[in-house]
Image 1 (cartoon, helix red, strand yellow):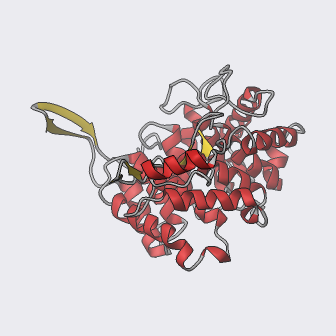
Image 2: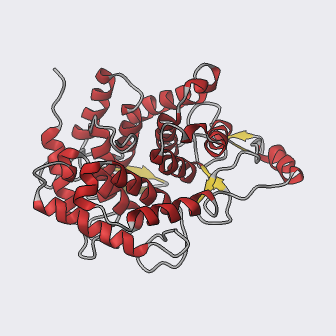
Length: 354
């Protein structure tokens, strides 16, 4: 019999509502300064029908989403972008998860009726234009591309998205930008030249042993290892963009990335890493395997602090605890808790909103 995670999900949603800052945002840790990214992900998680997106919405959760959306709407710049925190005048990659979340909001009728505002469509249009323009890395000429290929063995004709305007592209912001754009129109956006080019970018930046890192699979002739965070976000982007043309030899990078996460999740002692891995794997694996990863996320394998020796010194490191059954959180973090809630839900509303 499949495990029922409903009670665990409810505690997680309550944690988000209870840990919200007074300004309407969330930080990366409970009580920390409000940032755009954890706020967008917390709202995305609460949009679940069993969270604050369905009928009989618990009032505190409903109010939390309303306050968060008010805070996020007030932070958009005139060029369509968002900074990383309140009153940040700069544009940043945190625009991508906000546009992702707003696209989900405007496409699900129930969410529109609860939380929608007339200005949301204009905000989306301006944000999308910024992503397609300033958010994407600038192109380079043939000479620079040849130099990059010699040094790093990557093809700069494939353009990713950057952490900030005018910068080079990297894997995580590219994955988030791709998701934000494709969620708007999952039927046709994967066929556009921009998304096709981004998928080639991700293929080109994949590590040869499987998975992705920041975006450099090689450095000065050496092979660099993948990381679970970049691999998780890249795979979520792949899940929403896969078309018939991707299967066969073209899906090798995806298969190797999934295999890398399968190995990594069983070795990790980080709540956040396990949440990311379980989330990405839940989109690709069969139900019986997904349950194994979800149970690891919920229960953990160890608890408390682990003391180990490093360069002759004792170092204390927090090990995986799973969900705090009293408060409902993972790692006392709205961001990690939101990712965990996405990993535990079978509803794909956040990738295919209807």
